[in-house]
Image 1: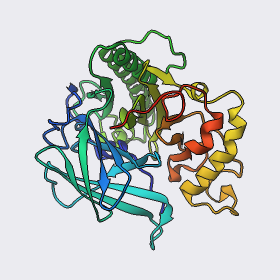
Image 2: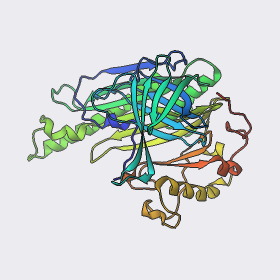
Image 3: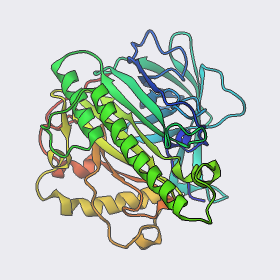
Image 4: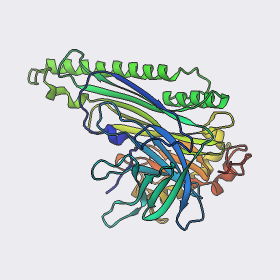
Length: 415
């Protein structure tokens, strides 16, 4: 069985209850090492470092916690990403547990797509953590003991959340509701770098392709997205009601059973940290939408920021001219490793065709670059997103000078 991890989609795909239209917004600043959030359901971003028992190299964990989404009974999502000495980020999914977990306990899971268990499922590694009084995390990873300490990131980040539920047919008692949400990261402080990163994050949420377009404030960005969603949602709802009214065999339009399932629209966006080390910040922007049909659509956009300037590092800022062709064999080797495709197997045993494609959806990590292929880009929807990591040792001849990476024109800060 193939699994794909929707770090933020899981609570969105739960059955949603109709509720009055209301807006909700919250913010929580990143915390200093001495004052971790009260529990894991409290929104915030925290950076941890530590060692597995018996290991010589440190492990870095980034946790981004978002509050509950309006219209969902989920307690709020935790997005995790960790890496070791190789700098390859691995996503962690919040795992389920029997009963309501203690607020100071955290259960996460990493699924290795290249390794299958006896039932054909991706091999799972469980993270069982608890928060100590001094803010450290202690527990096990795959049964191996671990201790993690919170460290102060170069750029403190707050988690900001906006949400609303919208009636498809205002004034009707049994109207279905659509749900829209925006969860993002906002740098703390007013330094030029913090302001530049904040503006560039909002540009990424808006999907800007030009770096110098004027960008609204966060509240204004949310209002734009909300207004666009309401317009689109109610136009579709009106069209559906007109179609039902014209069909004399259909149930009356006031029947919730007629239109409610197909009108439970969703538009949700979120942001989480992949890595933050030295002058490098890389984030994942996740978008999910449902507008009827068998399933919703989702995609992740990954981006890196240079914390010396606040600039977004797009593909052409990272790679030298002519690198596109040279990247293809590196990506093919990486996708074989990621999906467990043998060296002598055809790629189209799991990909849509036998030729590797290039994506410009890429971010840097301390150990290389992460390329993310969204559903349908190189695989069927059932395989979900495919993240391909290419180590720095293979990439160095293709990289531009001056990137915030070890040996690329600047030193990484040690912590």
